[in-house]
Length: 317
Ligand SMILES: Nc1ncnc2c1ncn2[C@@H]1O[C@H](COP(=O)(O)OP(=O)(O)OP(=O)(O)O)[C@@H](O)[C@H]1O
Ligand SMILES: [Mg+2]
Image 1 (cartoon, helix red, strand yellow):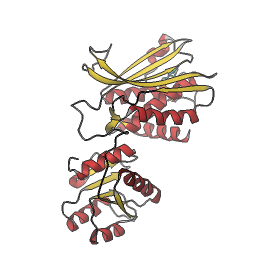
Image 2 (cartoon, rainbow, N blue to C red; image 1 turned 30 degrees about the horizontal axis):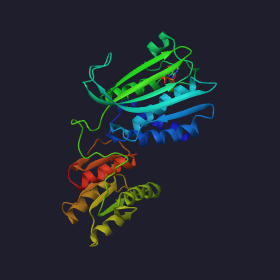
Image 3 (cartoon, helix red, strand yellow; image 1 turned 90 degrees about the horizontal axis):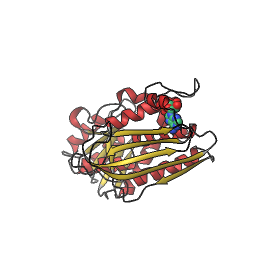
Image 4 (tube, rainbow, N blue to C red; image 1 turned 120 degrees about the vertical axis):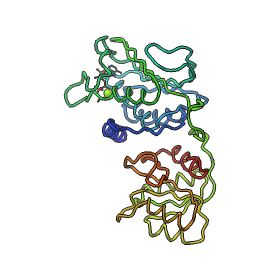
């Protein structure tokens, strides 16, 4: 519940100025994670069924926002099943020959996520308005009426399409149709959750918050990198003055005590010309920082860090 609330809070906060960081995401891994979370969150009365073949290819979308969208749909489903019921979430690959009704999608291959419940359903007049911002049938203080409008906005911004079907008394099915990552239009070098690229070489991780640093270090070691750690710019500079080989500098932008990851990166480049640099920040700075260092937005998923580190190391960031 805590995680759900946190995701929802972030989505609300950023709804107006959302910067999507799409990447290739393996639907099976994403849904398995989501299923575990939902089983803990939705209570015993709701039976959660996840179905997704491991071979369903990667979708191209912002992982955090996609998870958030599916979570919003699942919470709506729970609310529509006050006495329990079944929630089925699935993903499959689909070839769209002609445009589905009302969409502007070009023909091609897509991933269709389906969230179906056996709840109260919606009357036609409710369904017609359900996607309007602030439209809610819930009691004051219960629903903001923003869930579905955010899902809709996310899907459209991601180059996808949404189909909703509901019958009063029978239940509701919502489909999110999103682009396939293997589309030639999406950037190369992206990876799936299942087949993360192995890393090699040493990454210098600079992060002032110990807990966040521990997570980054654990992820990077998991990918196969050796890791040097620093809790502040001074410590990082000591490593850079040493002769230890460093393949990549991965630093937070705001380092505490007024120190800046951007300044650190510039000093690192003076000490070690050409050193690959990847910066990370929770602030909205865009995809690059001043001086054109690549930026990984926080919070990031394991897959996103893997892809960003590879891209920085191989100079195609
Ligand atoms: N799965 C569903 N079954 C039945 N009705 C639904 C379902 N999903 C949405 N609705 C209807 O659409 C309305 C709008 O949904 P939306 O998610 O946008 O807002 P909300 O759930 O009311 O509030 P919020 O999500 O912001 O907390 C709901 O109030 C409900 O009437
Ligand atoms: Mg909702």
